[in-house]
Length: 254
Length: 257
Image 1: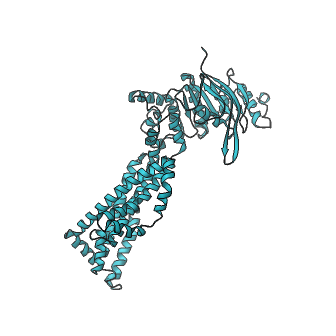
Image 2: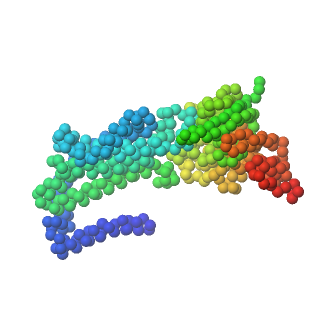
């Protein structure tokens, strides 16, 4: 009953938005060039699914996200861990990385396009630069926040550095590493769509900007909705994995 | 051949906090025999935990000498186990893995046997596959004691191990520790600020001053029938310890009884 109420509450805003949308388009209060009607968006969706265009676009976009995200996530975890456990790495890398981090993504774009063009490489580079930092920062935080009390217990048993890392530092950091991984994933998706909007000839972001050029507002809306839904699905997937990995955190209950 | 013993000679320890130097321990001299149950009682911040940490090898010291069985203590070792005020069980490990946490050098079967027997000893068999946050405070502390004992140390260091437990659980745990000590013969060094606890458990009670911690008195309670808290001898020792911490006299129990 409780979960029913939660779902019902969570669905209230989207239902309200749809009703309002339906009302203003049906009554003609807003011209269809600005806000297309729901059936028009539905039709665009249907046509894009039937023609295979949507699947092809999503396939291209998701492949880019997966490639870029995997590189960013593994780099972020490895570099974050090194900085977290080793003062020397921290002193060597942190100043440079924090300087790079403060450069906005948009400032990188011209350079990336100059170097990598508007093909696959540039998309992946953009994702890697965007998603790397949240993963790294949270990994550093998780590792350095490992409670001293637990490390003392490991020291009492004369546990070596390597085993201490696997048995204490890493599990202690896992919840926060997942916070970084989640942030990184949503940022990957955002960065990808942004880069496809600006410079691309394929992918879901490109489809939106193409719809604008071809004056098909229903295509823009369809694209936005699909992006939103995919974003939620990706995040839910990662949250499920995170819950599995930190089962001990929730009282061992599934 | 002399018995193994812990010897502390002229031990002093100070910390630097910012630019200030804080003296924690001042010229501690102690000798603790194998198999003894010694309690150290003092106000919070008197350096008693610092002393225990030095014995455990977790904390370095600069002046004085701390040696067990003739070997100077400079780092932790399997001859010493430790139990803290917080149970410090690693939340991501099942109870069995927590208890066997420091037995990683042993083959699996041997480790499991040790874990099993120690779980039985402290009365938590049946919780092997639970996670620490599923256990009550008393149960978690039992698991922590099992972990401290699992490697069969010769000395068990207990740093206010029952400080976070409710009064009833605390008394029960004191009895359990006494029972384990009697059956295992492990040397026990227990730090507490609870005078009752110190007298109930200790064969010798070491009274420490406020910072910097000095040994004020060592009270021999070995031959007293002190294990009964209602006993007059218990009250007499209690009165003696009390005097070190409070100016005002305790009501004279010998007359009121």
